[in-house]
Image (cartoon, rainbow over all chains, first blue to last red; front, side, top):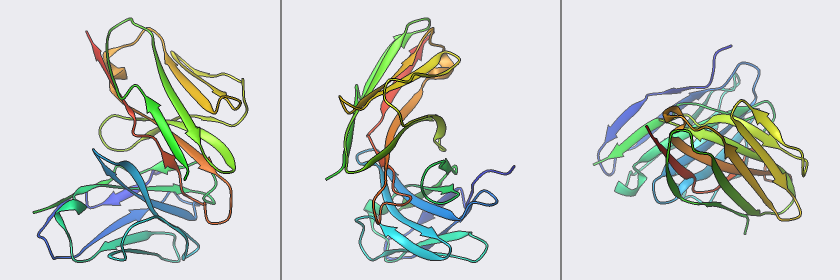
Length: 112
Length: 114
């Protein structure tokens, strides 16, 4: 079966702009989690969506937001980009958000 | 605050060596511990451990959980250059508001030289 698909693979944006990243989970998985990975901080949890509802949120500013659609696809949005937002953004899907997580290949965001 | 600590942070070995990677954790309501291998981008799943003392094996890789010591080890025997990667340890918890939130260590970067 198809894995977790993230688009785009790479993105370069200017400070102050906004960006939207997309994640299509494995068929049948209803939970999608988002993580930010940087060399200094490692993987940090952003938020988790299940059946179109945000159930859990990490410690990130309100500029980071997300949503989930009825087909379980999820998007995350970052507004007013800062240089420090440059990172690899990974999403992971699971059936119910309680184990069995599969990761996508990520979106590499560079803010200049 | 929940935390996961991995050691060492980096390791350089030669092909054929055996390596042991360590992961310790302090979390509320432990559910499971997971190991992932990250070569370029997508972390790929290696093991999920829930019960103490039961070794999981897959080829040259094995892992075991010690709930008393709040730790786990990942062993790789007869290392190959293809084992070069970052190995991530993560802990899954189960309490209200923890769904989908894996707590990761910083990872161990393993380099295997020919």
